[in-house]
Each structure stands twice: as structure tokens, then as C-alpha cells.
Length: 416
Image (cartoon, rainbow, N blue to C red; front, top):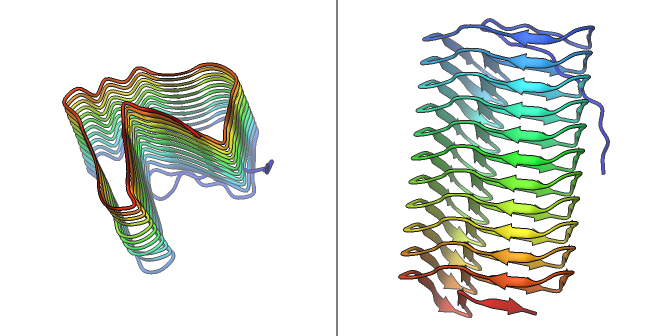
């Protein structure tokens, strides 16, 4: 597990403050008002920042707060290796001896990066190779906003929290509002994340909580090797010293990954190669939503909990609402999971309970070698020091696997 030291301080371009290799003996605050403004950078290796706070290679002996107002603003970077950030907080190689808070208002704004190797962030918090001696909080408002990255190797984030190779000595919380927003990554090797919390190769000495509101929103990744995540919590190769909670609201939302080797996740909790010293709880609301992965080697997960190669020192509970929703994987070697709990090669020191509601929903895998689970519990090569129960409601639902070598489970418990 990497224990990194990082420091970030810079509020860029429009009403921004910048620090490089600095020592700030107090807090860093951005209260800029950029309503209806336009911030444009054209060329290669551009950085377009509006109402953003960035701290790089620096130390802050206090909190870092971003309170910018970017309603109706446009932030654009065109070229290669671009970074376009609006109403976000970005910490790289930084040390912050206090909390990190992002409270930006980006309603109706547009944040666009066009080219290759782009990063487009709206109302998000990104912590990379950093040490935060406090909590990380995102309370951004991104209703009706558009965040777009077009090209190859893109990262598009709206109302998300991303913690990579970092130490957070507190909790990580995401409470962003992304109703009616659009987050789009078009090209190859794209990552589109909306209202999600992603923790990779990090230590969090507290709980991880995702309570984002993504009603009627659209999160889209088009190309190959895409990752589309909407209202989900994803923990990879990390230590979490508290529970993991996903309470996102994704009613009527659309999460789409089109291409090969895609992953589309909506209202789900996914834990891989990690230690969690608390219980894992997924209470997402995905009523009337659509989660779609089209291509080969796809994974489509809606209102589900997946634990792989991990240790959970508490129970695993999935209580998602997926009534009238559609979860679809079309192609070869697909996995479609709705309102299900899957435990693989893991140890759970507590109960495993699946109580999802999937009335009138459709879970579909079409192609070859497909696996479709709805309202089911699947335990493989795992140790569970407690009971395993399935109380799912699948009235009027359809769980379909079409092709060759397929498996379809509905309202079932499978232990291998």
C-alpha cells in the first residue's frame, strides 16, 4: 500500500490562486464568482481552470476550501494533453494538515476538453499522491451541467471524488447534486464518472460515503476499454478504516458504455483487493434507470454489491431499489448483474444479506458466455463467518441470457 506525500495549491486562470512548491502556514480558500464567464485554452498540453483550487508539490497547514460560483459558465481546452477543470479541487503531491472541502456551484455550466489525454472535471475532488490530515468532502452542485472529454485516454468527472495513491486521515464523503447533468467521454480508454466515489491504492482512516443525487442524469463512455460509473462506490487495493456506504439516487438516469472491455456501473458498490474494517452497505435507488454495456467483455452492474479478493470485517448488505429499471450487456463474455450480491475469493466476518427490490425490471445479457444475475446471491471460494440470506423481490421481472454458454439466475442463492 503506497503511503504518499502530496500537496496541492492552485486556483487557476479565472479568479484563481496558484502555488508551486510552497509552504502555506494557514488555510487556502477560493470564493470566486465566475457566473456566465468563458475560459478557453487552445493548443497542446493546455490547462483551463475556472473556479478551481489546485495544490501541487506543496504543503498547507490548514484546510483547503473551494466555494466558487460558476453558474452558466464555459470552460474549454482544445488540443492534446489538456486539463479542463471547473468548480473542482485538485491535489497532487500535496500535504494538507486539515480538511479538504469542495462546495462549488456549477449549475448549467459547460466544461469541455477536446483532443487526446484529456481530463475534464466539473464539481469534483481529485486527490493524487497526497496526504490529507482530515476529511475529504464534495458538496458540489452540478445540476444541468455538461462535462465532456473527446479523444483518447480521457477522464471525465462530474460530482465525483477520486482518491489515488493517497492517505486520508479522516472520512471521504461525496454529496454532489448532478440532477439532469451530462458527463461524456468519447474515444478509447475512457473513464466517465458521475456522482461516484473512487478509492484506489489508498489508505482511508475513516468511512467512505457516497450520497450523490443523479436523477435524470446521463453518464456515457463511447469507445474501447471504457469505464462508466454513475452513483457508485468503487474501492480497489485500499484500506478503509471504517464502513463503506453507497446511498446514491439514480432514478431515471442513464449509464452507458459502448465498445469493448467496458464496465458500466450504476448505484453499485464494488470492492476488490481491499480491507474494510466495517460493514459494506448499498442502498442505491435506481428506479426507472438504464445501465447499458455494448460490445465484448462487458460488465453491467446495477444496484448490486460485488466483493472480490477482499477482507470485510463486518456484514455485507445490499438493499437497492431497481423497480422498472433496465440493466443490459450485449456482446461476448458479458456479465449483467441487477440487485444482486456477489462474493468471490473473499472473507466476510459478518452476515451477507440481499434484500433488493427488482419488480418489473429487466436484466439482459445477449451473446456468448454470458452471466446474468437478478435478485440473487452468489458466493464462490469465499469464507463467510455469518449467515447468507436472500430476500429479493423480483415480481414481474425479466432476467435473460441469450446465446451460448450462458447462465441466468433470478431470486437465487448460489454457493460454490
